[in-house]
Structure formats: C-alpha cells, structure tokens
Image 1 (cartoon, rainbow, N blue to C red):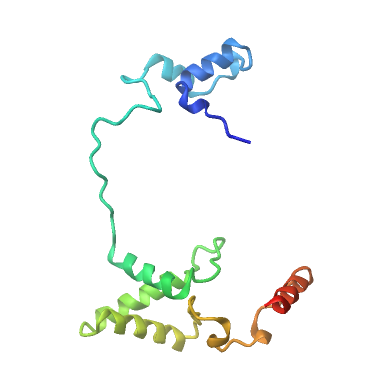
Image 2 (tube, rainbow, N blue to C red):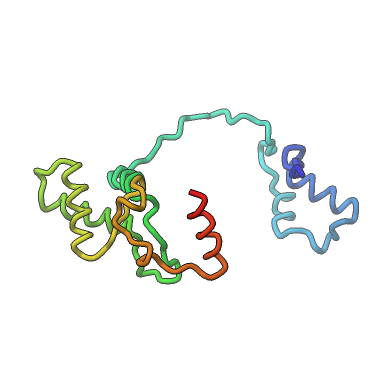
Length: 165
C-alpha cells in the first residue's frame, strides 16, 4: 500500500485548516503552533517543490578518526553489541580508535598500516577479541563449542542451515 503524499500538496497550515473546516479536528484541539503560525506566517510559503535559491554546496566534514573507524568497520565489521543502558560502556570501534590514537601519539615513525596492526595487537593483548569480517569462521580458529548457545527455538534452524551447506 502506498503512503500518503499529502505533504506535497499543501502547507501544514492549510491541511490543519482543512481538518478543522471538515470538523475532523476541533478548534480547541488545534496544535500548539497553530496560533503562532497564523499570527506570524512565514515570508515565503513552505512548498515541497520549491527549489532553494541559495544552494551552496554542503561540505563533507571528516575527522581524522573517521578514516580509522571506516577501516575498522571494513576489517572487523560493526564491532559487536553496544550496551546503550550503560553510559560508561565503550564500543569496540571506539576502543580501537582510542588505542590507535594513543599509539600514534607515542610513536610518530609508524605508518598507518603499522599503527593499525599495533592497535589490533594491543587490544588483543588486553583481552579484546576482534574478528575479521572478511575471513570465514574456520580461519578465525573459533570452535563451534565456544560460540554463544542459541535458544532452542533457533537451534533447529542452525542445524538445517548446517546440513544444507
């Protein structure tokens, strides 16, 4: 089913006025912004099809750590689960970037590839396990017994996919 395209046909004010005229929306239940919008209408009516007159190009903003993050995601994937309930938790990607920048600050003679490898090795030494996203599971030396157990509901699906391959 196609979505509504009414946002292209008129302004939000005309649509709300139409709802009130058709008595689908009571005047008492009007949105908070309605009176302000009526008292101070915009100089140029908002229109979906209007082209901005000052179309200055928007510059891309890249930080030095963005290149590191992009390479991390390319090499290791998204980096695991992030606990959003704990504000002190740090993602593997962010931990990697911090370690990379720390090593770069203390040893300026290393190339970017060497820094990347050194950060990977340093995190491995600290006990953080980074899996390469491009390698198959067999090359990562991960035995199936060390994988997290699946619920019984998905165990059958895992068996079926293993036998089909």
